[in-house]
Image 1 (cartoon, helix red, strand yellow):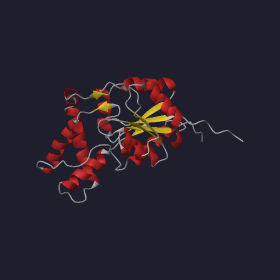
Image 2 (spheres, helix red, strand yellow):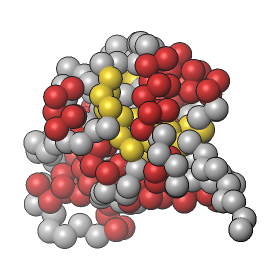
Image 3 (cartoon, one colour):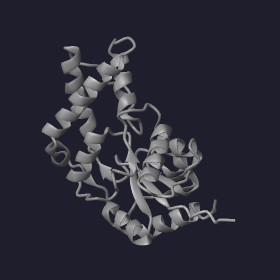
Length: 241
């Protein structure tokens, strides 16, 4: 009987309000891009937190009177938003955005512990990579081991895509050893819906009790204690497959 290889531990980071504070950057970039498409000032009263850019933009189009927006229209709007983000990139920093306390140390601690690190974010790829660059993150978390909010409405699809990307990169990636680290109930549910583990990072927007009630396996207050994060990942992936 051949022993199966031991799975790699894969941490999939959410970005906004987990690793970095976008300081409202997305909202400020989406509104004028949407206005340009509609030819008028848009209504912006939809929820952004924890959702994919595709879901947000689809709902915004519907809320502004576009019936059944098709893939071409959504792709056009995604590109317009990404273009504006790249043109006005400094707006994120000038508005007070940047890496959250402990974020760089947390990424470094996971690397030292042998955890592989990717991304599972509602941000579209172009804006996610821009935010990581602006906030001083280098090759980690690795964009090649991840999934972005361009293509899916549901975050669970992103987790599945990220695991598949990790396998394509040669990792032994399985849900039981994949950990989504995020700050919203959408992050937690996306993990649980795929059989992955969820570590909630509490914030002023979503408190620890809410994340725990959503099913997070562990909730931490923030990223300022890297050892606590490493320990949490060790504990939630301790069950062997």
